[in-house]
Image (cartoon, rainbow, N blue to C red):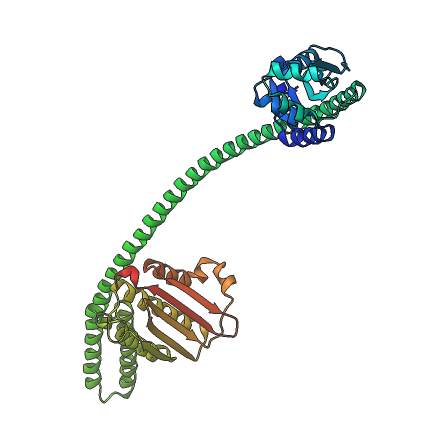
Length: 433
């Protein structure tokens, strides 16, 4: 059972009920807990109660009645009436679970207060002016003891009902408090678990970011080494093989001059000269692809020069449009990325697209460099190719890796029979431009 004091702290249960009872009976009600301590009230002070209280007088019958009620035992203790000076109070023991846990006392009622001598004696003992006590007593109607006992029985029923309701409310509050405490513990435990999981996740994310940063840096260094190797190979092709081919062509020219009178020999030498010319052109184009000299003069010049050489080599026209870049240079890393991606995109057109025309757009938009390569070829299913064998998507992967190294992105739009569009966007703010 809850502590007795807690049962009387549910004000929204006790106050309205006691207030209505006191107003109906014209009595002041007080509730006393164990030990005779006042726990509720006084409720609805009557004029007589206020007058005596104002003058600091207590005839003692309220405390006596409460003590007698608290001292009772039994499942249904009797109602107690305590008189003094022609006044009466009625008390009821309040029982919960077979035990008296409180007492409710209602008063003061006029019982035998008609004689002037009683009023004078009370006024004298209470230190109250007789005139004031007389005027107040005239406002109270005498209450027969039978009716007073009935008030006590009603007060007892009301008190017992309120006690049970208070017990139920206190028990519900206790259960709710325990549930809340349990929920708070669960939340605290869950929060602790989540904090641990978050800390682990943050560590894993940090480690992964560090690994990705290391991988990106490694790819960047490999790209730099690759460009350096391209330059070396381009020089070797141009200087060594170029000279050898030139010497071969000169030797063929001398042989052709010496064999002027031999028609058969002239035909063989002519075929050899044609092969040498093609080798010379192929070596020149290969050296060009490895390291285009015009890139040193800017991306626009390099793209223009490369597309012309590419068209001459593969026979597909390229319509080039540039905007916002002609008057200035882009950062070296951006120009290299754009050039290599354009180169890879055109090579893919030559190898796979079966296209008859290509449009290349190179623009500077706000703080972005944008490259668009669009062909009218056979197209392909982007999603299926992206999930296909590595050798089928090597070119796409290479373009995306180069874009990532420059902090950019590559988007590819294509459908079978509807051509292909490669869109590259590189933010220039990340490169100090």
